Length: 118
Image 1 (cartoon, rainbow, N blue to C red):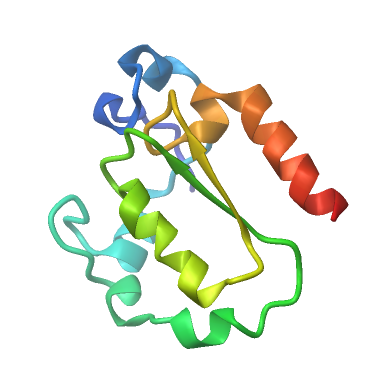
Image 2 (cartoon, rainbow, N blue to C red):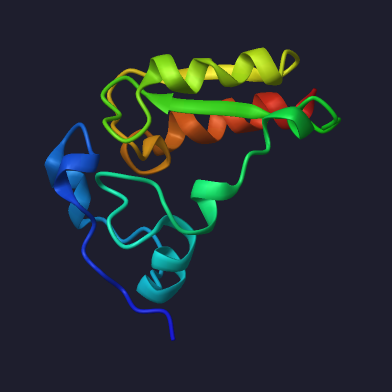
């Protein structure tokens, strides 16, 4: 059963944004996907899952999103996806950590609309 948990303040540029409700969280599913200690090592199913080769076959509009202050997936790593998705749009949100859709919601929605309209 999904349960609501507190967001982790360090995942946000502005720690006050951690209080905003974001999504339901199922810790059993998360541990199955990422391993028991994803903060230090990606394990679980994601540790064995590599989609990079298949990304170039995608034909739908794609927006690669990162926050300037993302500590989980730093912008430099997010930018590497452009290599595998050359037609994707790339957006860095200057006042966000790992959740630009929470910290800069209106800018995120506008970026998403721009990509979907193409």
